[in-house]
Amino acid sequence: MNSEYFKQFISLPPRTEILNRLWDFQHSKNYISDSDVTTLAKEYNISEVEVEGVASFYHFFHRKPAGKYVIYLNNSMTSQIKGYKRILEAFERETSATVGSTDPTGTFGLYLTPCIGLSDQEPAALINFHPFVNLNSLKVREIITQLKKGVPVEEICDEPEENLRYTPENKPSLFFSEFKIGKSISKLTDMEPEGVIEALRLTKLAGRGGAFYPTWMKWQAAADEKETKKVVVCNADEGEPGTFKDRVLMQRVPESMIEGMIICAYTIGASFGLIYLRGEYTWLKQRLEQAIKLYREKGLLGKDCGGITDFHFDIKIQMGAGSYVCGEETALLESAEGKRGEPRTRWFFPVQKGFLNLPTVVNNVETFCAAARIINMGADKYLTYGIPKSPGTKVISVSGDCKYPGIYEIEWGMTLRELLQECGAEDPYFIQESGPSGTVHTLDEQDQPFALFSDFFVQHIRCGGALTVYNKSRDIITILLNYADFYKHESCGICTPCRAGNFIIERKLERVRNGVANRNDIDELKEWGVLMRNTSRCGLGKTATNSLINTLDKFGDYFEKIVQHNGSDQSLKFDLEAATRDYEEFKD
Image (cartoon, rainbow, N blue to C red; front, side, top):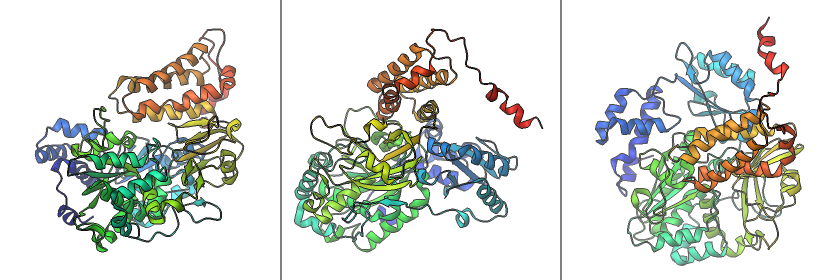
């Protein structure tokens, strides 16, 4: 982006540039050297230990040479069921690199990473942060052959499909219909901030990142703060495995997200906007920068935005660097300030003291897009969608064992059964909603509606944005172990319940997989899950065991069949085929 233009309106402390500087070093030679750490320490007048602490926190920063071509292969559960192992073998064979290292020539580095926002097009990988989707062994061979010939990555990478599968019947899409730039901004002076707040209140817009906090209450709280400098932050760090709705919104209609941020800034009196974009979406950065540039050229960003006197507001993009916990709003703010992305203790809410201790509204991509559409079309028309207590639509990422993975914009009130039918679910059995931190559903619950609120005694599903379908051939313990491994690696480690709990849960699940678990192990799994939920410092630890607890409750018969009932852990389940598999594979 044009940083000089941005600096006309916003002055930020130099320290906030440290992630960008680390990215510069990483991109220039594919690692961060000791001399780079020393340079940054002198530049920002901080210790080398502090710079090291920041660099070591993020998955995509390497302290040793990571190869000319850095390959990140998605190892999430959706990838696992779509052929991940074959693709990993193909990359190892074609590059001569093993996981976590480079090949002998230093040309290729091969690394694993959890969900890269392409669950509808698995197996998928990033090479130098360019996307490659729907991989198979032959495609991997062709990619590596081309790279060895010196063909630039950007010339052979894929353009991920949007895969918009479903929008409301007999009505225009709320999120994906044509968006006229500046139309909602032109309504702001007539509505005034109070009118915007009222429109959000009437439409019951709630945060679409999973917490579902009423948007109007958050914006009102920030508007009421007396501090003259305020901030709007868009959380585009969409890291929940199985979720890719925000990616598609940014691919297709980034203007609605930007316009939602401008509306928020006008409402609360902010002058600075920040889009925190996950490192896995580096390939989307140019698309967003083009949209921001267009808004500046039209006078909708910068000085007197949209012709509104004294409303000065501009937006900057901050790239993340590979950390799931930075999806938690206070960890995101710490990261944007150039620090380790560790969640803050809740002495203050971000609307009181957020980015640089200024009042800050943090909403995710879908929330800002929805706000722009509400102001654009008016509350009355928005209320014709959905059901009375849950108006509007919800964008859901669907993947897994289904014929039509992709994006489904459903009206609140659609049932789980109807969505499973629309996506062509194949023998659904274990249905994961809102990613590993969400809820597991069985077929007994498929008549429940998706809703924010419903009538008393009516069970409903509050979906944060993803639905992953697993059929009966998928092993439940393998799924839970994948989740546990994910959370063990993504925990920031600052609080003991999450740091130790995820490790212990993984070990307990391994006992179940190995056939040595007894009833006490199952009870202890649930006890640890509840303990983490009640005592962890942030949302990661509090929700990491949601799926585990759900599964133990809803698939009790499954666990009864596979645990020992004699109290002994000595009769290890022995699988002769598994024990001799490596020998049989290589004996010739």
